[in-house]
Image 1: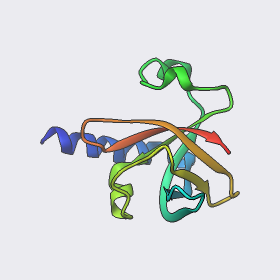
Image 2 (image 1 turned 180 degrees about the vertical axis):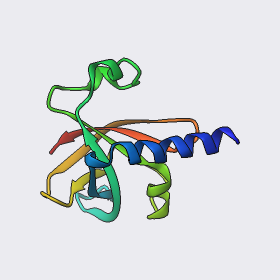
Image 3 (image 1 turned 135 degrees about the horizontal axis):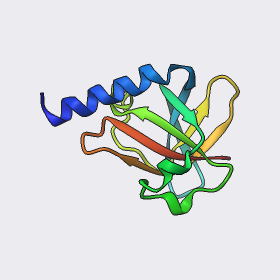
Length: 124
């Protein structure tokens, strides 16, 4: 089994284990044109949304950016690619389908196979 396959399988397992934390969201790609007009394209994905655990924070490259009200979003890279999102950006936003809450993507990390992305989300 290749390293890439191992990471992909691990990402699938995370979503099976934490099924109760999965939310339907829109990954919104925001393209800025430089003239105060943004183009927003919505892509439906499943995302685990949870708080940051103190033990996990130390391993994230963006740990110094986390504020007490921020939340963690986890999304499978394959899920993003399946809906046409190939590059993540801190210009993009996440909108929860169940309550319409919008989060700015402040930062993100991924594994070498881009199987699972961890996003630092801040309510807009």
